[in-house]
Figure 1 (cartoon, rainbow, N blue to C red):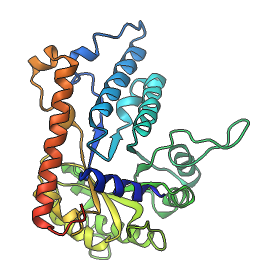
Figure 2 (cartoon, one colour):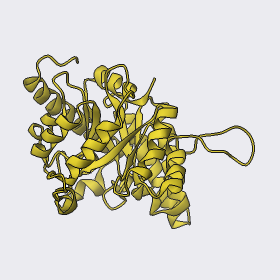
Figure 3 (spheres, rainbow, N blue to C red):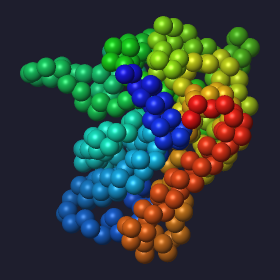
Length: 318
């Protein structure tokens, strides 16, 4: 089964088109996770706290959401220890049956892009033995701004192994307009030009639900542009950041979906992990109290998104 079909089936089963971002920020994390660490190496201690934190989050939400999205920057900053925590987080999430989206925004010239694609989505040739997977995630976010030749390795690996990518098209940050909304020689925005390119890559590469695993990142903070991009990319799955704290509302994400309730998955990171805590609670919460809030925030997000979609699309398939 290709990854986009598994993502869809988990979405239908859990009635929840959302993904929890695993962005472990030590400055925002409850103190109870930092008080149990005894390693003398500060980088190792940070990574150990992150791994324990992630496991608890996964245990709390795995039966509510179809996917998680670890953002690799929060792990890389702790060096090799952080990368190990990233690897272990992926393994644990997959053990719990979750789809894993690595938010790494990788790309480079052709041979380097191929190395990135193999590391995250494919299988590498080790020093001895059979080919093996390194990170082995289900989806990877990819930066397209080096052109089509840099994209081909990712597309080829996806087709070979049934994996998926989400290509940056219209990101949720305020500064995205400085580049992504520039008018091209075709009289349309850079984002729209990218969307046309992505739509062309879906030819003969669809899952059983009619969607391609070659997807797009489309921010909830730009609903009008999202509506245009959805028309250009009718068969591409959207990863939708910007919901909640960044300003995107339930109404803003409607254009990313199709009337069947499919076509997109909405991300929340800080809104689930941190925003429901005061500074006092961050210092005083037990793990039990903190995780209770995480589960409640996840359920609230699911309910708001589901009810809003159902109002707009009463014939949804879930």
